[in-house]
Length: 115
Image 1 (cartoon, rainbow, N blue to C red):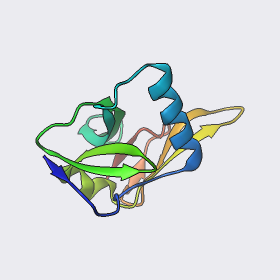
Image 2 (cartoon, one colour):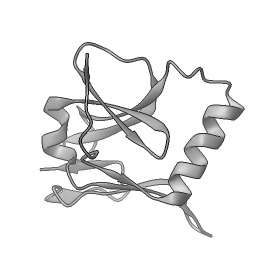
Image 3 (cartoon, helix red, strand yellow):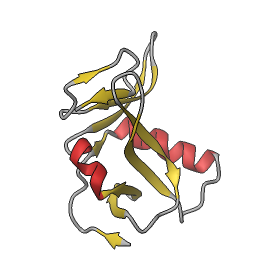
């Protein structure tokens, strides 16, 4: 299990970090868990984002952003490098948003993309 001292390949805004920490505390998620950020096949544009608390696996590289452990498989970094995760709270939309410079197209729901 690799632990990286490098800067994480993604950024998480202050509002998203606050929301993630609130969820972790509210759901009583243990410190063994970290935030899994990744991709999986599927969704209306080809790939869907993976975002959730999980346990570390042998395939993960571990990063830390403002005290929050981030788990990411090396193979997924290719699709995610430079991505920003934000928390949006507006009249028409509330939730995490993904600003991914590697996406050649995205769907209307904002949770899937093609590269």
